[in-house]
Length: 265
Image (cartoon, rainbow, N blue to C red; front, side):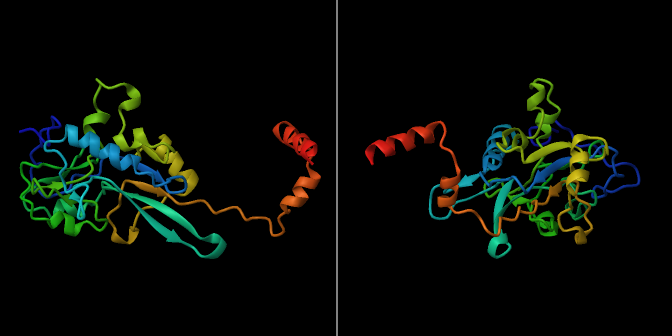
């Protein structure tokens, strides 16, 4: 049996465990670190995720009436925008959302067929579409809304951390990362082993004070978010443009403009 067209075969549960049991926490915890300070909401990660997984998935991610009045379809990654703060502190925060590959993933334990499972070797949560019956229980149990029912196939879809890329030795080393990470133009997405405290992603989380999403849910998400940095306060008495012009000595282009205006005057 081939899982999701990824060339992966689901392993039978260990003796003493049923199909909906979680494995022991793995030493390797592959995941994403997302920097909310520099994400600009360009949607490049969303589009590249869709392109890669539509061409490599077991079944293409459906699109219905894509350019019509009521578009519908399955996406593994979405970016939302929120307004935060008031007055001078007001800002727009772009918030990417996909599966967080939780250590205590409720989507795994609630699945009645074992289609939703967590890999013991690297902690990635996947769905075996051959076993999925489309009941939607995993989507209901996910506190992050990170799973979507494919309207055409009738099975659950979710982020796979591009497991068919990260272990693919046929790809150049720089491409052996999730598609969303590879395509981000601002380098707001990072991929690595969050189980290794010395890894680049773990150090980044420690340096920037990375946080869990909704820690009160006790799902222990592997993915982390880097909060937006505080804005630098503007000078309370900014210099007027006229004062700046009077103090500045024209140079370069502005020197040429100054001379030209003098001639015209």
